[in-house]
Each structure stands twice: as C-alpha cells, then as structure tokens.
Image 1 (cartoon, rainbow, N blue to C red):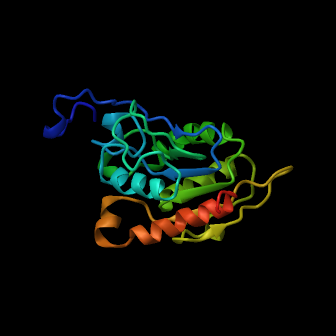
Image 2: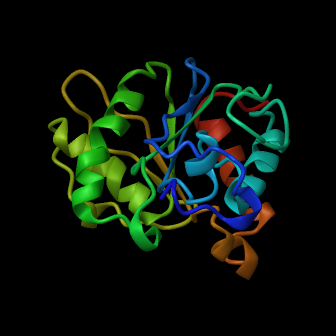
Image 3: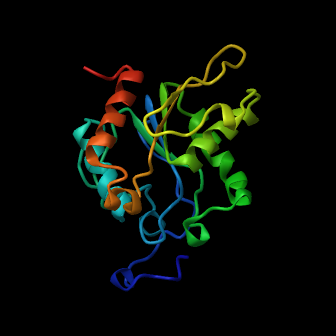
Amino acid sequence: MAQRKRRAYREEDYWGAPVPGFGDASARIVLVGLAPGAHGSNRTGRMFTGDASGGFLYPALHRAGLSSAPRSLARDDALVLHRTWITAVARCVPPGNRPTPQELDACRPWLARDLNSLPEARVLVALGKVAHDGVLKHYRERGLDLRLSRYPFAHGAVHRLAAEPGAAPPPLLDSYHVSFQNTNTGRLTEVMFDEVLELAKRLAGLAG
C-alpha cells in the first residue's frame, strides 16, 4: 500500500511498514484500534495520525488531559500522551479496511507485546468490535476461559474479564470506532466519546 499514494501526498515517503504502538510506557489507559489507515498511519508511521480518525481522536484525548496537543501531525512531532498508550489489532493496511482472520492472528503477537509491556494498565478501551474481539482472543490465548458470546460488544459497556491465576486482566471498555464513517454519521459524537474517556479515567484511577 505504500506504492499507492494519494495525490496530496505523492511527494511524501510513506512509512509502509507495520505501525508500532505509541504512548506513555506508564500508561493506565490502553486504546486498542483496528488497523492503520492507508493514507494515515500507513503514511506517517504513528497510530491514528494523518487521517480523519486521528482528527477526531486526538482532540478528545487533549480535552481529557491525556494528550499534550489536540493534533497529531507526524511521528516526530512534539505530541506526548499522558498515562495513555495506543495500539491496534492489525498493524498493516488491510485490503478494503477489513482485516482477515488470518491477518489478525498473525498480528496478535504485536498486540500481546504491547499489552505485556504495560504493567500499570488499568483499563483497555476497544475501539470497535474487531478490537474488542481481538483483546478477548489475546487473553484466551494466555489461558483464560473466555467465550466471545459472554462478552458482547456494546458502546459504553464495561466487561470484567474472568481472573487468571494470580491476577485479573484490566476491565475492557467498549466504544464505537472513531472512524470517519461513525463520526460523520453521528453514530459516535464528541460527547459520546468524551464520556467513554471520562469513564476510562475513572476506571484507571485518573479522574479528579
């Protein structure tokens, strides 16, 4: 996909590689997205940067006090996330923006690496059902007895996952994805997403 450049970016060098997670290593809130946008993070090399999804997400993070700036421009700008990490269940641009089960399975070790390297995580925010299912599958692969049907995706829902020996995973909080399709149609509004982030902050012990 790095060879298929949009005219507006034809002079830019696209990242064109798996997009790594990004944020604060001491994160208490972990946002789990879907996949890089073809001309967004696939171009810039940073999650949710350079497209309409990021244009909705970063202002919300800034309003919530979780980002130092309301816009993410490039992977080498001065933006800093506060107690927040952004990851995704797929790391390369999927055909038609729909990752296949095989691709999600292949990318799950990247998700696992991010989650396993964030010992202070207190809540996981799934942006969309695919991310929701990907988080559940990650913990199922770690040995938890999780059935997806027992944890149905629903915007604003909080799922307390079954405890594994010695520790329970952080709760899983669902949100509609911040895609242009959702935000442009009003399925996800700024108020709705602000409420999700405030709930995430309370669950993470960051409110007040």
